[in-house]
Length: 308
Image 1 (tube, rainbow, N blue to C red):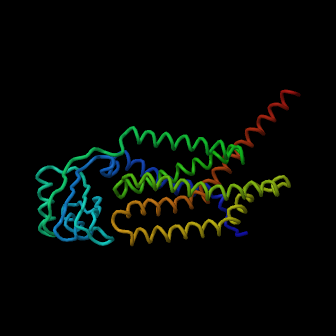
Image 2: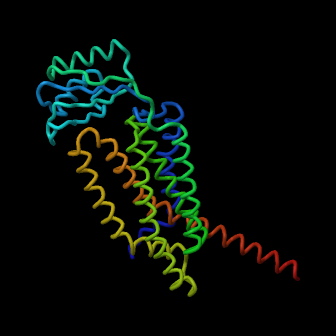
Image 3: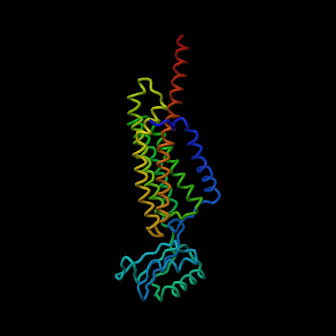
């Protein structure tokens, strides 16, 4: 086993995380987030062009107005993978003059078209749905704690959920720092990250449990057991995260503008999930376990004194 003691340096790993999370919380409080039209509402323009056009043409015509991140869909009977005469653009809420300028830019840079539909729409993800999503996440954390407490022990469940909260805060911090757009796909990315992170954490916890049975009863040290468990699963954890990162990096660089924010969330989340499983979850469990053992020791000492 390598000599580098991961468990002993738990305070270092916690400080590294706090150096991201605390500025992230400050940024969330002061700068907030760049919510997309799924949260804020916007304008829909359904256009029918005389000649087939491409997504690139439409996006380039919107870029001077800072709208190149808008949702653009090709549709209609003439549509194919690359071009179509029927285009639906969903963008932020535009004032009348701004909308006319944008449509004039599309006409001059892309081609003539007929307006099939033009309307303002409300947010598809309302505050009630957001609260329901948060409630579902909290309930899932509670169920995770109960399940892990049943299969392992209660402290494992607490450490696992704290590691998940750590990963979500890291992703939120990076989106607040970069002001990348948050839309409905961001919610899907968060759920994917939670699933990935808890799976990686459980693998390490399972190995800790096995090593506890094998070594702790024979006088083994908890720090040594945690280090042994991490290094025994380290290769698997690294293989898993690199495989996932290669996929989402390809999605980020080659998937087009509409998938960049989703892929960025996964890149940050998978990296944070791997880090938290190795450097946060296990040291957290170790800290909780030692405190619980100390309380039991003090309670036993008090009991013996009272008996005497």
